[in-house]
Amino acid sequence: MSTIVANNNLKIALAQMASNDGDIELNVQKAVDVIIAAAKEKAAIVIFPEEYLTGYAPELIKSDIVRYTLTANDERLNPLLAVCKQQQIAAVIGAPTRVNDKLFISSIVIDRFGIEKIRYNKMNLDEDERKIYTAGSNLVMLELDGWQLGLAICYDSAFGEHARLLAQAGCQAYLVSALFTKGNGYDESEIRFAARAHDNTMYTTMTNYCGYTESRESCGLSRVWDPKGKVIEMASVENQELLYAEFDAEQLDEVRTENPVLIDSKKYELRGIKLTTVKL
Image 1 (cartoon, rainbow, N blue to C red):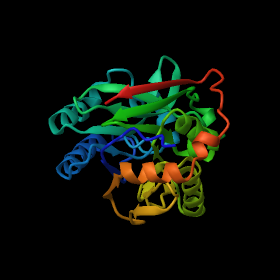
Image 2 (image 1 turned 135 degrees about the horizontal axis):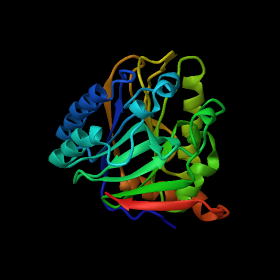
Image 3 (image 1 turned 180 degrees about the vertical axis):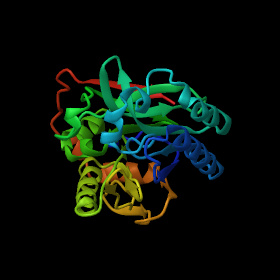
Image 4 (image 1 turned 90 degrees about the vertical axis):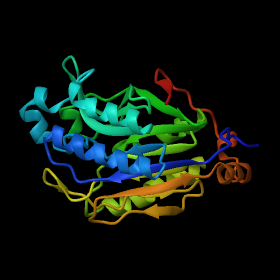
């Protein structure tokens, strides 16, 4: 039995970037240039790293929470809204966000009409992140050209149930914005994402930083895994670059027919977790 509904392929872009810590306006302008470049290559959506707009810089963010977090309808996002509308491309861009007195690690989703559609808040925080941020409680799935795209941020991907809940809800590709660092970051991401892709028969992507953000040195190597868990595209260690991949509807259909793991899996209960699907 097949679970695929898309009847066309989908081209995506991963923006492996170095962030200028704390300079939101400059990072926005760099993202604008990247979005234009991705649109020229006919990508339907471009995904940026975790907290790209400020850098992954918790000490800096704590030093001035008002300055270094983004609130609802934040005017600093306007150039991104405008370029997505102009270029007719969707974008997922990471930033620390603030709602009242709560801070979140978020993926801000902009559709190809230049409308901010939703903010996905990282659900799984590590010990240090919990000192600053509040964990999100809602899963988010994007509908784009017939494809169901599940969102995750870095540590979310360490928990198999996060990806499985999305897959059981119809997710066909798992899009992860991240910061993986030199040291154990490469091995950690290599094992983790291959498993998420293979065990859920879905495309999986990881968009990483390159260079330093605050005191952390990224290991780069943003990658795309196919539904069998094989790497099909990989970026360099050091360079800023756009990595492109095409999600193949026929291949996904074939893999899910051959490996009915989703059909045979026990259905997880959301247990108070909300799943929101938005159309881009």
